[in-house]
Length: 418
Image 1 (cartoon, rainbow, N blue to C red):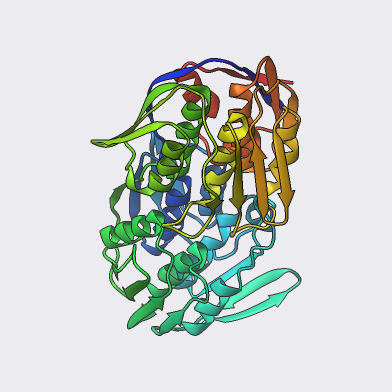
Image 2: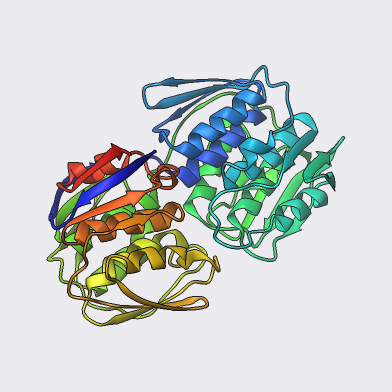
């Protein structure tokens, strides 16, 4: 057992290289099973979720090894099609392996995925897309058994722009005869990254970043080298940290565009956020003001994963800010823990109102989920006195040593065994 211990009150300054994207690398690792060859994944973040993905790859028969910050995946000897229940329960994104395994082997067996408890996140759209491509899917004893002697191209219309369903449909379509068209596809940068990786393998995928994605399947695939994009949610978290604590920082290796909704909110709150060449710079005096209502939405709207960090940053703002959560109904589970530090937040259903207080005070809190855990860390950075954040393993799912990165900016934060 361990905890993060934070001494609040320091301004943040300096430069920070942003890690590779968690939500980008996981579908890339799933896609690596499509080719019976070796892939080199550069700037692969060392996260708990990546560890789980590696364990899944190894269980399927792949050889995986680290070379510095690059992950080498050799899927030539893949001989399995089943993911154990224990690994499926480790993370939500484990379901992304479904379409890739089915395309490679014609069969896949797995249970329903786990991950943060943010409310119902059904995989009906995933399964519907695979059935449209010709898969037969049966559920028995909590297991999903998927078979497809032959996948056939089709038109897939997603009822919602689900990121996971879009990724699974693309991966499965790579093994289908003909050209598949996916309508109402998710538009996130991570979908574009998956397309770029697949094209580097020799697949024919186009349209990612828009609402219509086209996949021509049954292409001969080969290994490749791919560099993971910067993590826009980690970038948003560190922007919010500097905004709340005051100071100035340059985030390196990150594109401003995926961060623009967060940057604009911080500018409205009184910060200065500037796009530079392969970097984003922020300046803040730490005295934030309330902003217009923040409504989460699919990309390019305000990201739900950045909502906890922004709400935490505004805990000491002047005035009240309304947040409307349109993606996950249980996203506010972290709010009760923030209240232990003195934050004033009222929640009613999908709406939260944060009324800024003059001072936050250190306290003992515990992480409820990945992004909520990061919000607690940001609150601790602002608080007077010492904050203890228990269960940081939730944070480790998406941040590569958050204490190291924040310490490099001048925060007083360390990981202690308990």
